[in-house]
Length: 503
Image (tube, rainbow, N blue to C red; front, side, top):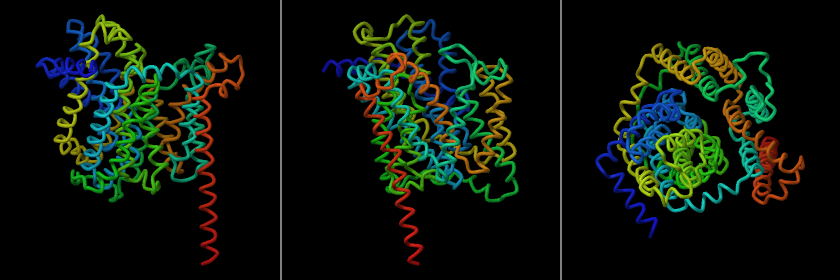
């Protein structure tokens, strides 16, 4: 009953004229920023912190929360239409969203993304309200050993991100591991693989790699195939109508990934990016026809879009209840809390209930605003497909360059962007999937840090993984997920051999 009363007081904040106005401003700005490749919610929130100095803390934090989940909601547009992820959390969206747009189903893809995002966001807000105290305790129970086991489990599914050679998928992942080691070693302070170049001391930013491997690689493909008429078939918006069959296919992934995405978002350091990848991999593994993924699958689009939006709400659990940021964006939000004189943590719900429940209630309202705002705009958003190809290619290049330069204001990153664009194009030419590269890059740094911390705690003994029930369970699941596909492929090969012999 206390939670219900608190939520009602939160709705009083959210439904006030001022609350509605600033929730709308937050989600509108977030959606717009999410569509722009490179301009993610972290930059937007950082810019807004000085603007909110004189504002009421409750209203200011409600608005900045709206920017956060609004950017994740809107980031799907550039991923679907241009294969240029607006934010890191929408990389997996491009795997099936962009192929749908190429098939003349851009309107349908955007509609599926909007509905899946709304579902994931709404379900996760309900879970946030009900289970914040319990899940905060679960998040605290995850130590370095558990985090390493969780990341290891994610890596075992690398083969699932490839429709072709498993060896090529693992080679791609190995390259991702190599790239993530570039920079200063966080534990020893020594430089690694920088070759004496001071620009590489801080490592390579994720956005440089994502935009290079996806956006610029796509630009190279379009330029080289400019005389191919088949490349022009993606200019049609297509119908926004979603059939009953599509809704049936979406329902399973949206239900499962709303919960899974929220739980992953709760874990400090995980966030929407990892949630979207794990959601995509999970759905592909359990699908009856996994070969459809990567070719415009409804499930392949709905799963990551549901999970990344669910994870944004999950990231508020450790922030609000423990004062621990659950993602890079909530780390900036933590700074905003402190600047506004609000201390998030166990006492927030008692000392400042209007802020705690106001943020949660505003998410209900914000998700409705996002759905109402985005669905009518789909025909206008999709008009980007009608832009002449030379102009479209130029815009993708310009937005990619601006997005990368806006992060570091370093021209060296622009050279890296071009280099990864060439690498991405060569990977396409020789059928090396880029997704394992991205996943290994995301998980590699966190895995290394978690393993080092684990071995420090155990004085170098790997036996600590046997003493931790959660870590041991995750490792066992990882081994099973690696072995089952091998036996399945072998059995499939034997069946096909027997069929050929009988014929």
